Amino acid sequence: MAELLTEICGTKLRNPTILAAGILGVTSATLERAANSGAGAVTTKSIGPIRREGHPNPVVVETPCGLLNAVGLSCPSPEESIEELKKTIKELDIPVIASFYAHSELEFGNLAERISGVKPHLLEANISCPNVENDFGMAIGTDAEASSRITAEIKSMTDIPLIVKLTPNVTDIREIARAVEDAGADAIAVINTYGPGMAINAETGRPVLSNMFGGLSGPAIKPIALRCVYELYDEVGIPLIGIGGIQTGKDMAEMLMAGASACGIGTAIMNRGVEVFSEICRELEEFMDEHGYSRVRDIVGLAHR
Ligand code: RRO
Image (cartoon, rainbow, N blue to C red):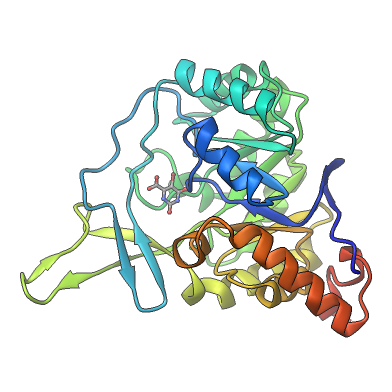
């Protein structure tokens, strides 16, 4: 039987499936559901510097090959989020990745320091949300210089390994990845949602999302995620977490072959339920057994031969 163990920045994962940020990630109870269903690690919904309501409903709409969302970075106060994170870390026996966002360099650094106090295994800086105003979210992740400054500031405030999550909505993702690697990032997660896109209800003649536009996830963006991981595997020397459209064990094998060491799962939970983690692992194991691969590292980057 194939061995699914993998590793991100020295943190061992029992398998390469990671609950992606923003899905089931607000409370320890929902994160625990993903852990119990077999996830290798879980990521919290992005913790912010102040309580934020997010956009009014509807914030999610299904499209033929994926989901559009414009949740709008909703989050409890940082005190509440960090308390919940502390509980999650205590209760779960798998690595917990704390995702967070802020509005400025200093705020990113301060929040990273506060979150690090409860010792998550890894931090994930979200500089790539497509659904918010200009001064944060994707505005940072599309600017190599801002991405670099924020990464360096976070690194100066914490010793916990830092994953930086990038947006695909750039001309050259390699430039942004190089900038964050040079600034000290320990790993890169690619990709956040694509777009924004929109849905219109033909009956009402109105946009469906209250925010009108939202980020696209799911099978529609898998080819884009694969391309980003493939490009970055050649470009940077730090581990990659591949996210975007992974629904099956075979999808995951492809993402590992592109160069990811582990993979985020999000939209697939809507389609296959929370059991998707153990199902994808079983499918990946079967795929590896059938093809004679015995360890995850045998297939990481295989498509680059
Ligand atoms: O909350 C959101 O609307 C959101 C976030 Br923070 C993100 O990083 N990506 C996304 O598609 N939605």
